[in-house]
Figure 1: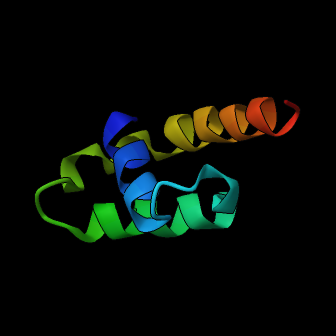
Figure 2: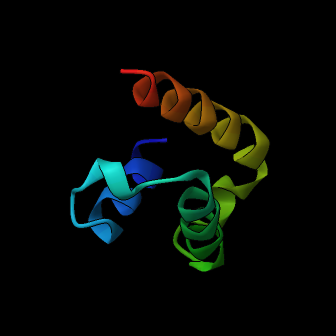
Figure 3: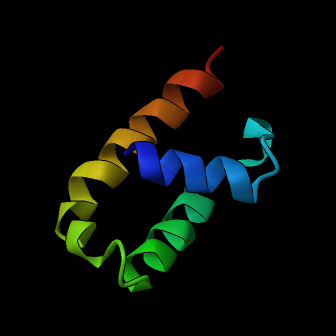
Length: 61
């Protein structure tokens, strides 16, 4: 989860307002294609659900 958020923030130039679920999915797939991180891809559903909950929570603030 930490790796995903680090990658997302880096790609969004540390501007969380520009992040949406399609960005998360795209970056997750990029991480899965990277041989260094491919071993974590079987957690995809769990991680994406946590991300969506976080996005909903922070978008309400």
